[in-house]
Amino acid sequence: MTPAAIVSKLWNFCNVLRDDGMSYGDYVEQLTYLLFLKMADERTKPPYSQPSTVPAAYSWPTLVKKDGDELFDHYRHTLENLGNEKGLLGLIFNKSQNKFQDPAKLRRLIVDLIDKENWSVMSADVKGDAYEGLLEKNAQDTKSGAGQYFTPRPLIQAIVDVIAPKPGENICDPACGTGGFLLAAHDSLIKHHPHMTKVELKALKEGTFKGWELVQATARLCAMNLMLHGISGLESDLPLTVADSLATDPGERFDIILTNPPFGKKSSTTIVAEDGKIARETETIERDDFWATTSNKQLNFMQHVKTLLKQNGRAAVVVPDNVLFEGGAGETIRRKLLHDCDVHTLLRLPTGLFYAQGVKANVLFFERKPASETPWTRKLWIYDLRTNVHFTLKTNPLKRNDLDEFVQLYAKPRTATWSAENPTGRWRCYDYADLVARDKASLDIFWLKDDSLEDSDNLPAPGILAAEIVEDLQAALEQFRLIAEDLGAVEGE
Image (cartoon, rainbow, N blue to C red; front, side):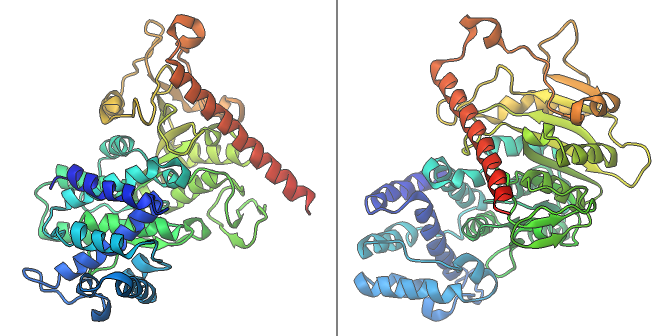
């Protein structure tokens, strides 16, 4: 079966379960448990003949043999007991619960849908793409909030295309969600380096990738996603840590960091930086490696990414607009970043890309450099994909070819498409001196005229206008909510 056919089959069954009150997210999670058990069982048979990591009392055949209330009880005990195991089993099954209401529907999923396929024989592309399809459908369910963990795959593909990972480089995402960046980097390495040696292929599977994810349920989906795509396996450790990656410097350093940190301002921990200031929250963590103290999570992630990079390591970080213009700690961090790193490229993204509403985002590309008295950033090249560009999640979603021009222009040598003679060019560069002379060293730079402001005949379709108004209002509400929280914290002291 094709990935689309498998997704369709599994998804149609989800619609049956929704009548019982099961959410999309719950369904994908239950599917993860069952797929894992089925594949673990498949690996015990030829040609693999591997010992199972799953205790025999909770193996796949024990589920297939049971029915009715007996199946329900056994499934519940299976989840509870496997959740107490260490390692990969613990990661997949930790805090797992049976969300089915009807034993007959659980049995149908086990016997009719999962047991009939041989998942281990399927190529990693087929089963991985099928699972990705389910994750994307889950992200589209705005009520679940799962969209905040899902970065649009065409955007990820374009970012990976310009970063161009090479064999032997190690790659990290400190806020990995369901694993989109790690998987795209893996696919890029396979595609562009088809003649890797056995040693390189082993390193690709076991030593190339590292991810951190704070939310257990999301980490579970990421673990399954990585396994289905062939990154590590049932018998090896997954390159995934369930923890707040901001809490401490892990000591590891990476050649490439690709990440879309969670939106939302507050950090769950207190950071004490080299400026000695403390952002008050529940616990205090000293980070001597941070330039400034702030409760803005994205600004902390920018500093964290700088720490995680090896010298001359490359990073691509999705950031909301406030990271480009916010004063105080934001200005301190931007000036230090421009001085200590080569901040060479900024991609301004259009609205309507993300499942989290009200987000105006960008991708900042930079390289970490050795200590220097003179600034490393010489020129910042900006590509404006926002002005006069409109996407919607359903009727006009972003496609990979929408980023073709950016990908082509990113390569060196670079030539601006903007000039006085061509004022509609989207690719323009700014010197370091111009950037630091701007108010608060703001990188929130735009030069294209908004056609809708110039000519009312040029207005986007009413649906797009309405969606943009909603996004702007939600972004404003989010800012006011954060201000109210800050005021409440001050008044409560």
